Every structure is written in C-alpha cells, then in structure tokens.
Length: 176
Image 1 (cartoon, rainbow, N blue to C red):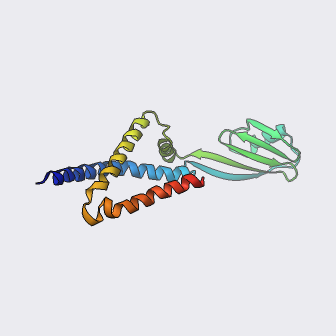
Image 2: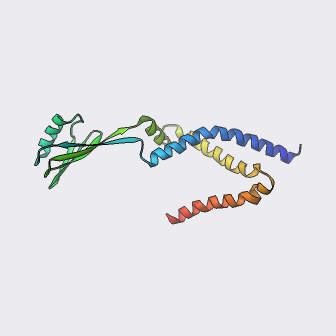
Image 3: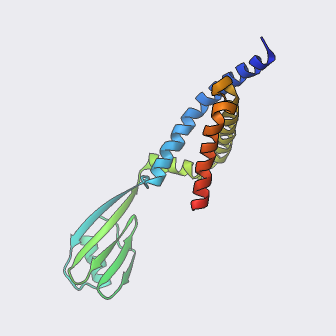
C-alpha cells in the first residue's frame, strides 16, 4: 500500500469516528440554537382581570391579592391613565379608565433553558467541552478537504464550495 493511501485511509477513519462523536453535540447545539433564537426557554402566559376603574396603587395591590392566584405585586409605577405593576414571575398593566388589568407570567422550561445555557456557554465547565468540540470541528473541516481524491476532490470541485461558504460569511460580515 502506498504511503499516500495510508494517510488518506487514516484520515478517513479518524474523520469518520470524530464525525460520529460530534453528531450528538451538533444536534444539541443546533436544537439549543433554535430554542435560544425563538426564546423557547421561557413559557409566557397572558391573562386579564376586570377590576373597578380608578384604583390607586394600594387598592390595586389589595384587590390583586383577592382576585388572582398570582404572587403579590412587589412594585408598581403609576402614570396618568395606567399603573404598571410587577410581581415575581410576571408583570402587567392596569388601565385606570377601564378597570382592565392585563398581565404576563413567565415560567422556565427546564430542559430548553438548560440547552440554551449550554449554547451560551453559561454552564460551569462546559467551556472545556465547547473548546474541544470546536477543535474537533476544525479537524473535521480540514481532514474532510483531503479525503476525496481526483475530480471530485478539494482542488477540483471542493474549492468552489469552500469559496462559496467563505463568501456567505463575508457577505454577512459586510452587511452587518
């Protein structure tokens, strides 16, 4: 067996096995990126409560306690026609003219939140895994360039796809 073929054979074997290894991490990163992009780590619920009109901040807080199962109002800010209020896990707005209070509550989705934290490298120790993953991806990218020989190889066909990939990144770099 020629030396050139031995190198290509070992590159293919390493490329294959490293590729299998990073598929799991890649799927987690891809899903967590989707969760993060679409803000799916938190579930938002919207609600309304009809109160009497012209309540003060104190009256609103007292009636809120009676009419809802939400936590107590911890802070409120009174304006001319509305009172903005906040409570643990949510916030809302009371319209003094109509008596209608609209509010939103926010609840974490634990698995999606964890995956989003992984994606943003906020989990202790994950940086080492992320750096190792990046090094393996660099290896896969470079070794993949030399695995296919001949007319479909990097210097014939691959150079165009490689250039197109770099061009997409450069276009975004110059657009934004």
